[in-house]
Amino acid sequence: MTRFSTVRHPVRITLAVLAIAALPAGAAVALPSDGSSPQVSPAAAERSTGCAAGWGSLPEASKTPGRAAVQNVRTGRHACFDRLVVDLGGRSTGYQVAYVPVVIQDGSGAEVPTRGNAVLRIAVEAPAYDAAGRPTYRLKNQRELSNVTGYDTFRQVAWGGSFEGRTALALGVRARLPFQTQVIAGPGSSTRLVVDVAHHW
Image: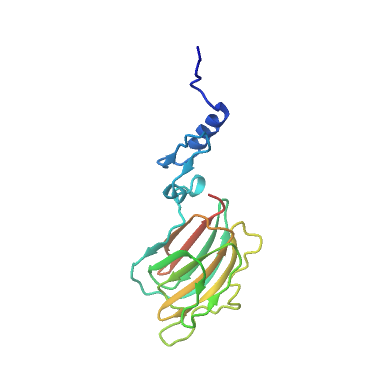
């Protein structure tokens, strides 16, 4: 009499169980019948875990109105992410942050080349000039707004132009990694647009 085993490929099954356990809560998983590794759905892949839990790589935007002008662009390194800050001389403002194939400079239509394997276009609804057309942010080098040498994720911060009340930046990064965007009020009447990009998924 032939006996059939109810357990096949125990090593593959164990690996599959471990892979599923490492996924974020609510991740959709397809279990292949051939014993291969489980596949994570695209929606689950857009959510990060660990210190960047809940972050994703899809576009983020806010239509909050405000009167502000760009005063500075700076960067910083943190334990699990790199941070870009746009200092604004005024209250909260709208923004759009998204991965794009290439950043197009506002006004001229020229491409903004960046180092890295992915690029984030950061647009803030605030000019880099005042009502008289005088610059509020004096950049020394349009190609290198901040020195990001040695950063884990950032590769370059380049100027994308300031046109018709909107300022754009091109943030070259190591890969299409999860990010989060937030507007922080203060000090005083100023506002900061903060974009954090994780080191890993």
